[in-house]
Structure formats: structure tokens, C-alpha cells
Length: 334
Image (tube, rainbow, N blue to C red; front, side):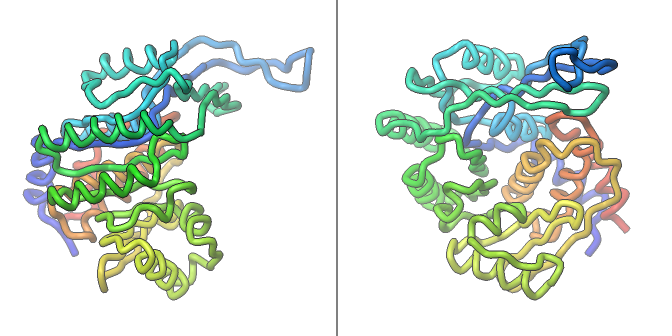
């Protein structure tokens, strides 16, 4: 199936009018960039001479950056700590020109911060400071009320669950938000992790990667065998009752299934530098296409292109809309 240039341009323009609610675990992604030219005399480890420091919004906030980069309006909902890292996160959010309406602060948890050390353009070390326990009962109630208020007061086109297993998304929250979305006719999409994997019942689009699918269903199968792959996805849909499954297969591309239609789209040849954040980009583009009521083949094609494009950069970076449109025109039009 091919698409016209006009069709793609109109689709990308339609993103500019969309409001996207993103629920999930946010974090600060910190980077130390430098040069390595010697080994430490203290231990057999390289010394990185830092020449640049940077902090970016990460986790669900990277999805918000991708949504914003695609021209839509992101409304980010999360819980962060009442700490220095939380202040840093809010400053980043403000500098990105995004709303703080959906952010709750907690005195009982720390804000997640992941620090990456990059020497000679290669990631050498990552340090994680985080709290992975569930937000407490009072915070869960307050958080749901905040989400409900946003859904009732704003014209939301799609809701994304960006789950990093850090405790912001709970099973009861998932159920309540999905029920509210169905009632309001709002599509829901999920980028899952392990803990809540089987809790995302009745969502519109579910986007696991291969590792998450195997762990979530507690199965092992040969993903290169089409029959085994299809049977596993069928079992997933039987248990979750989701409408669309978008399974990312790394270097093998993407597999999509909806009702009786399914197709595997090959990955395009890339100079892969860093796969960090590719899943965030895939769920962002897929969600916007779903909100625009596109067919599942196009949802998969564009998501596949987008995920590949961001892998050409070092670190977690959002998609460039114009670059994606240009590549889509080259590859998907006759």
C-alpha cells in the first residue's frame, strides 16, 4: 500500500491541532560528555575529561517532547519528588514551553535522575537514582482527580500511558483512566513495562517490545517464525482485549496486528548510534496517527521510520518532524 504526498502532508498538519495526555514516570536525563585518553591510576577504568554537561527531560517527558516536536500539544501527568531534582525537572519543563498542570509533587519519594557518562561519543556508564515503590494511596487519589479534571476540561485526542515501572502508574489508575477514556471516546495507547503489563485491558493500542512481550506473557518463542509470532500476539490480545498490537522487533522492524489484519514491516538500513528513547518516539508517532484515525499499516510504517531515525543520534532525543515527513515521502509514496 502506498500513500500520496498530499495525504502525508495533510496528516502531519493535522497533528498541530491535537491535545495529547501523557501519563507516566518522568525523569531527568543528565549527560556528561567528554574525552577519554588515559586510564585511572586508582582502578583499571577510563578517565573521562568532561567538557560539556547537559540535562534533558526523560521517561514519559521524552514522549511529551516527541509529541511537541510533531506539532501537537502535550499535557504531561506525573508525580515527582519535592527535591532539587524535581525543581530541575520543572525548570526543564518550563524551558520546553510545556504546562506543569499535570505534575504532582510528593514529599515521600525522590525524582528519578539517570546520569550518563559519554566518552569519545560512546556511553561508558549510567548512574540511576530513583524510587520504584508505588505512589501512596492519597497520592494515587489526588493524581487520578488531576487526570480526570484535565480530561473533563480539555479536548483530549489521545491518552498515552508511558510506563517505566517507577510507581507512578498503578493498576487501579490504569483501570479508572481507561474506563474514563472509553466513556469519553478517547483512544488509549500504551508503552508497557513488566509490573503492569497485564493490567492494560481494553486499551486501543498496545506497544511492547520483544523482551516485554516474552516477560509479560511468561512465554518464550521464536520471533523469526511467523506462525509463533502471530500465535503469541493472538494470546496477548485474548488476555488484554486491546484493539491494535504494535510489536517492535529491533533490527527486524515492526509487527502490527488489528483484528484479522497483520503485517511485519522491515527496519530500514540505518547507521545506528544509540537506541535510547526509540520506543518513546514510536509510541508518540503511533498515538498521533491513531488519533488522526489512520489505518494500522500507515501507523506501523510511520512509527517504524520514526523509531529508526532517532537511533541515528547519541542520547535520548526527540524526532524531527520535517525529517520524518521527508523520509515518509521518499519511502511510502509511489
